[in-house]
Length: 505
Image (cartoon, rainbow, N blue to C red; front, top):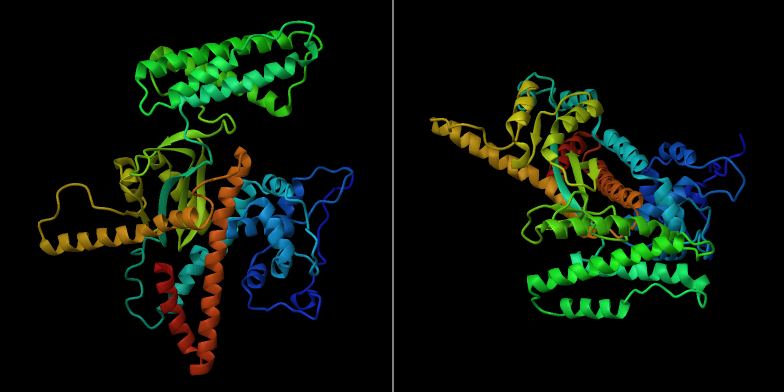
């Protein structure tokens, strides 16, 4: 077995030794310096090294540079090119990715960002993210020990936990759609694009035969003019659109037949790698559109809505802004404000069927079932209610059946339902932060695997941001405690109070 092209970097300098010209220095309280000290880089290095095959070649970039660059991109919402420029100009970012000193040269080419996303795939990033969540939230035994320390002098310390059932914690679950960066698909636009791509393929395949045999007819000018006449109408009639769809389908069928004949000839032109991968997609698109045209329907299983990203599927969400979104469907679970990705799928699915698996994964991570599960109305079916009741798990929302006759019990139930709605807003806020603050409102990665990797990276950055804020809060409380009370009771009281406020925020 040959030498690996990846070498472990164990010579990262300490913070005090990082060199900056002109007698400069880095501040120890900078956010990038503190974040670099928090991240356990060694945990992901083994998985990163396994992505390389032994052999000759240039030495690969270290994992801290790869993962650090991806974190910078997701945290600052930058393009690949702008990420490299920011690293080249900022000494704090250069320290964050593990350089030994400041340099005004780019540490790598922007195209390396694609390779970083492939090597650090969604599976690797999700495992790293779960390790961080488990370290921050802690196991069941650690949380029980913390609760005992907080309630040593309280006779009613067991009240409000799990009632002796052994359950602990709150699990928040919800699903959303991550839209992909594609134009809004219509049947005519997809067919016109497919027709133009096949015309380009015919030009490439026929180029060696110029002057020897006639080029297959494509009628591209007529087809383009007919297409523009329809889409430029403000409200095209259904019969007109259907007739144009039939014409575009005929053009694609003729072009695909011509491509097959040209490829059967010896000495034909060579298609590019992009065209070779696009040809089966166009054939599949033609079959789907032809079937929908003949059956007079607008739906089809695994319907293609983008030629450049054939893995994207329509996800019907029923939201006020857009009833249908085009992208990946994502399910996350939230524990103490830290998010874990449970499922990413490019096909639509009923998220309520995953509640059992998510609760079991919670038990596997933390050693116990949650005390309560906070979900929306879709999850609260009879199967999930029966499952949670058998494990002493309280599911959020109103109970089934008639309300109790006792007014005090009804008021208690109403307060509990209201508190559950307030608590569930936390997972909606996590979706909002990911879409508004970061890049999940419009996923710009083109490949399926890199898109999933970017989704995982955004949630990793969100958890790191929360960890960084909690560390800053603890540091401020410790400084204030040293000034007001050297004995330490003030620090403990303020930490418990502010952490409760922080978790609500």
